[in-house]
Length: 116
Image (cartoon, rainbow, N blue to C red; front, side, top):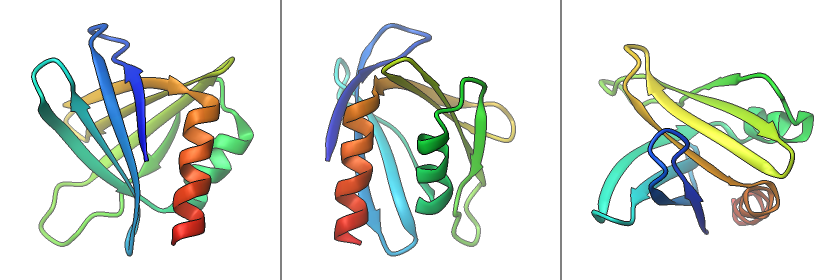
């Protein structure tokens, strides 16, 4: 499922693809202005759904499910009102961010959970 959002640091419109894969939930962001793939992260669905239900107002960190030889990544998540802010970063700090609607993100997670 595709969700439209904005980068909180740059203000650039981005899309977020939310897909179920055997390893978990894949979040893949794209920059619509340059059509550039930003990056992907795969996380276990349980902690992601738990964090969404808890609606954390402070950053909650969820580690990635990484394949052998792949750099580990972290997903930071905050919920403010009807907005979910996501930051994906490596342990060295490089990464991307996107803010999406709470209902859209919840619908996407329910859709991939039902498919998985």
